Amino acid sequence: MPRRDTGFTLLELVLSMSVLALMSAICYGAFHVAIRAVERGEVAVMTAQRLRAATDVLIKQVKSAVPYAALNEDEDVYPFFVGHPSTMTFVTANGLLGGGGLSRVRYYVQDDPIGLVLDENPHFSPVGLGTDPADEPGAASAVLLTGFTSLRFEYLLDDGADFEWRSLWDGYEEDLLPTAVRITIEGLPGLETDVWGHEIPIMVTTYGDANGEVDETDLPEFADEDFDDEDFDGEDFNDADFNDADFNDADFGDEDF
Image (tube, rainbow, N blue to C red; front, side):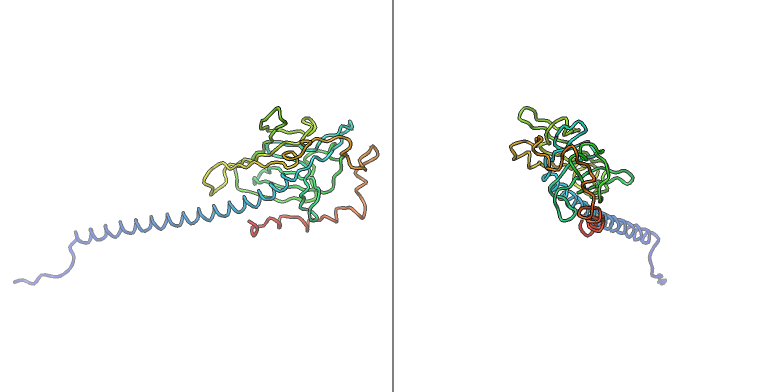
């Protein structure tokens, strides 16, 4: 009998390599899916933390909005609150500068890169609120949230006769504060829904008797015809008391999110 050489045939090699390639493809696919799931989870957690940190500040200050009496050039008295779809300015009793207190705050959406910015200024007066531009820079600012595609504010009118959400609010025209503010954010990565929204009631209008209205008796004692912003200048009240060291982007760093 002739001796047969041992080994694999060409068909056996082809079948083995095909099975090996198929198993490698399955393992790679499963590994890739697992890595993508972990990455999406990390993005979702980070987005949720940043969103919570930003909305915590926003909720506290909006809820604490006060009907601060502003005085315009015609000496008309009205509650200061200016709202647009991408910016709103008001006076809050929950300021972040100098450990709290009354502050004029402005929230606005910046471009390139897009982000929600908080601008705060404890240096304000009834005359200044009524005559200065609503977008006047404050003493300090911080970026609260980034990574979204769009953000808009809406304002609730609920005076007993009307109930509607508005994209614009002027305290002088309405002669009262909105009952609530709604924020809608689109395009945040990692969230289950592409649109996130939250409605924030303004406590003074929700539980107050005056619904955010003011008159001459609500003006501070120093807000008379002789008052000007120079009354705030001096060694007892100046920018040095609220420098950037007390309120800057570091207050909203990644460790907080």
